[in-house]
Length: 63
Image 1 (cartoon, rainbow, N blue to C red):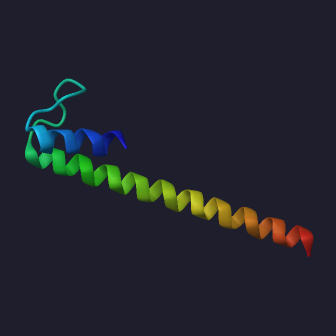
Image 2 (cartoon, one colour):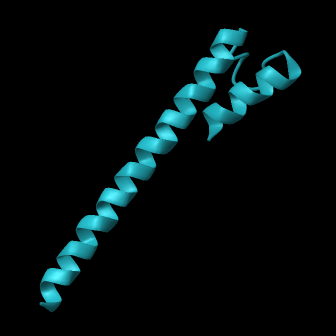
Image 3 (cartoon, rainbow, N blue to C red):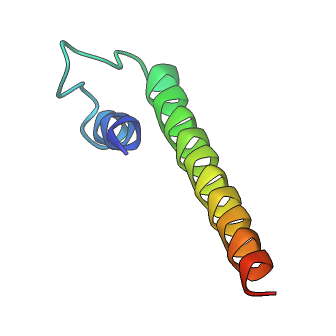
């Protein structure tokens, strides 16, 4: 979420706000936003896999 916020703030204001001026360029801001979304979707996938395996284990225990 921090990557998305950093990239978005740079796109909106035109200048970097946090972390010693990262990202410095428009392309860097787009890369930060993309990396942030990739990490969010990766984390969501990991959570869903863990929930599915947990539900499967509970269903096997009750059978």
